[in-house]
Amino acid sequence: MTDTPTDHPSFDWANFAASLSPVEVIEEPVLIKKRSRDFFWYSPVLNAQLKKCFGDLVAVPHTKDEMRHCLQRAYEADVPVTLRGGGTGNYGQAVPLQGGLILETTKMNRILEIGDGYVRAEAGALMADVNAALIAQGWEMAMFPSTQDIATIGGFVAGGSAGIGSIANGALREKGNIMQLKAFSLEAEPQEHVFDAEDALQLHHAWGLNGVITEVTLRTVPHRHWIGCMATFDSYEACYAAGYALATSTQIGRKLASTVEARIVAYFPRLKDHLREGKHLLVSLVPAEDMEALRALIKAQGGHLDLAMSDAERQAAKLPHVFEFAYNHTTLQVLKADRSATYQQIGVPDPADARAVAAVGAALGNDVWQHHEFARVDGKIVAFDLPIIWFTDEARLREIDKTYEAHGHSVADAHTYFVEGGGLKNADYRHLAWKKRMDPKGLLNPGKSRAWEEVKHLPAEEIEAKAKG
Ligand SMILES: Cc1cc2nc3c(=O)[nH]c(=O)nc-3n(C[C@H](O)[C@H](O)[C@H](O)COP(=O)(O)OP(=O)(O)OC[C@H]3O[C@@H](n4cnc5c(N)ncnc54)[C@H](O)[C@@H]3O)c2cc1C
Image 1 (cartoon, rainbow, N blue to C red):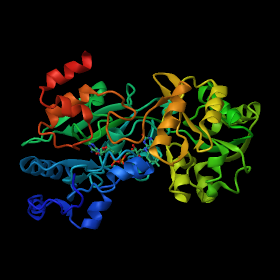
Image 2: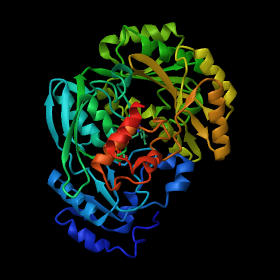
Image 3: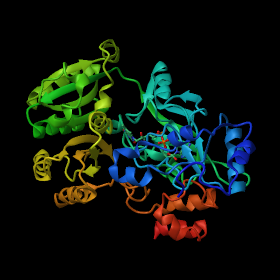
Image 4: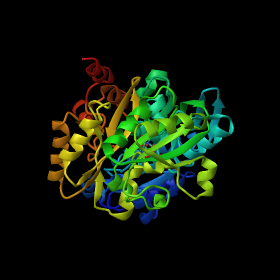
């Protein structure tokens, strides 16, 4: 691994940069260092491992031809290539472990087509821009990450998994959500391959290891007039139960239902004058026409609706989007005040069992504060905990994992930079077979797949066969 962008005395980076002309390049070490980071620092474990990993050069292609040119030059010179969109990943996905060229996509950002039920955009299009363009035409993304103001559509498909809207429309990987991906191979003559429908999963969540995504087509849904709602409860168990009731309601449309313990809510100063103090919080997005039903649900669950605002009202009140208090933004709000916080990703075994959720909360100790998200996976409502953890050391972190596991919860480790380590527990041999086809020299984002090291000498068909066997 390299420590600084200038740590390769034998390689002439200035000459390599010149060979990329006319593509825009960034050569200032400070700027290269900035673009070598993502949000891995949420994890003290990853922070220790990755904080000194930097690329050597950044290129910012504006067109596919420029992207192709960069890939050709990198292939010829055996230069590692790490793709970068907005750099909002949490696991160091966009950190160049072995130095090399960072290819930033943010200037390849055109929205190419909006049709009935789909949007096609260049990989570097900003999620917020895509959503705004869709809303103007009566559509919206089926789901988007809470980082939409920085994240790109290509980065979401390559590094993300679900988001605001997943409670109604499932995870990204579910049938119909990713309609098409186009991607370059990293070869002497880079080829653009087209992956339709299910085949797009060969590249989805592969962290840019097996192809350079150039265009993304995602499913969209008709736009609705959403109201951002915040309701408060006396106990976390009641709050969670209300979240589950909302998530499973057949009468209320919703694209977000998140529950947050009161101790975390105390770290949301922007909401101070809007919420009852010391209470547990249910954050949701509900269509205007379903507000009466939501009010009834909250009352029946023993809660109080503290805040309900349309987007225009929210902007007038100068408040952030409600989803900036959900998903991993919850962790961010706490980290703004205290960098010793971190988090973990925990699957709840029976999302209907609020009592069991409260029981594991009690067993965890005072250094773990619960926060749950509800989503739909394969047609069923699931819940996952993204707790705030007050970090002491890794041993305590693993003890917390074990307590969750002893209560039947699953842990998708947020403290590893291996693609096989987090949500994707086992090796994805379809991803790796495509890596062999698209990246025969293994130059794309090297070091992020453990399983690749074991299969890289095999032909693609043999790697793929492992997926079946
Ligand atoms: C506060 C916070 C909240 C978050 N909330 C969510 C959430 O709600 N849902 C969710 O899924 N994630 C979430 N994330 C994670 C992350 O923001 C999303 O996954 C986001 O969509 C990543 O987009 P990006 O453009 O920043 O990608 P980057 O971080 O730049 O890249 C992500 C990965 O994709 C690869 N990549 C980027 N562009 C390409 C390309 N064109 N071709 C091939 N590979 C490419 C990179 O190499 C990297 O491995 C959150 C993160 C933070 C910090």
